[in-house]
Image 1: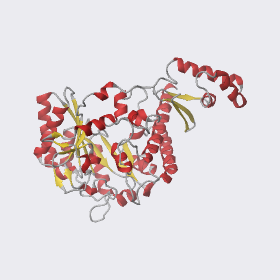
Image 2: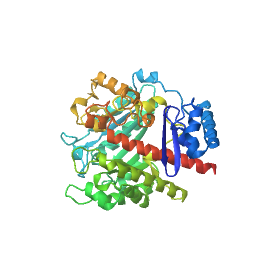
Image 3: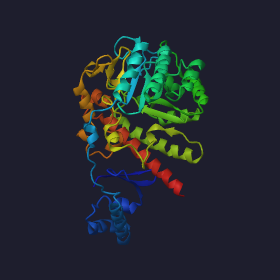
Image 4: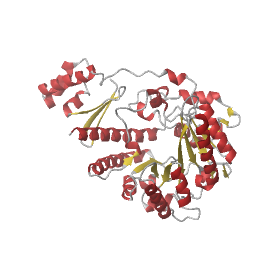
Length: 451
């Protein structure tokens, strides 16, 4: 009986975990699932008759049997796909174009750009090596992904331009197709740079934390001045120049703005329609999120979900990354279990050409996994990341969200628990609330289409 049931925004929702089927039920059938196990009809009817009446209870039980017969309720467990035993292909790289930054964000996991080591810029030759590395490691896979990251990658636009030109040349030589992304604080996003990024169809991830006072408190310049005004102006110009497409505006919320839904809506009111706001990751800091914050954060996600639906129905839609959930044709089981692929399909590359499992592991020297010149030096670590999927984590095996969160972020698990197999508990709770909101939204939109 692997199901998850919840009541949200006036809807009684049941998820059949293994099949992924979502059911919006009346209160009788919803309550029946507290008792019904597929073979105790009489006991279920007896338990519900006092509140709902025997006839309604019997009808609900019959409906539940129909769902079982269709394979949409109490569906069998999912086996671990054999493909997760195969040698992985390299699908994506995060190029740390610059280990330096022109802002001094107070929550920066990268140590304001240096990742705990020396500041520096990636040479052109290292960028070329990275392109060749992913081409060689991707085998017969045609599509590859590469993110220009930092620090602030626009501090090293010369290498970005060179890397893009090299990608285009290698695409023509190999038949590969690269999806390119650049993550920036937008401060240096001038017209010439923007024209280049648009011409090359490079997706932008633009960092903005919402309201002016929230953003400026956490994302100042090195001299302490707030950056909100310039960031907003340049981000709005960038979005307008590409027709409100091929970008995300990404923020971070902290203990200082637990009312983060207001920041999401503030960015939507500025005209940004592709939004993502993430919980801060931090330990032993005033801005860090704590367990006592969870009820407030849950309320914020629920309020944001209700407003998301209201604006969509009023013809003023925006997208919120964590509410984008495909209930019909989501990723394959292997992808759902393995998640982002950090450490086996996805690597971060430092300016010196060192390889780490992902951008958040950079600077954690025990996770230095190899380099572009010599390749993978710790194959046993790659195997460990490959095998540490959702069904391999004791805390995840029976969690209803396991096929959606893939066991959570390895870097956060290692930071808070010292082990990539031990999920970050607070992050799990936030993820489950976001998933409930996303499921409710998608079910609501599906019902709207039927009306």
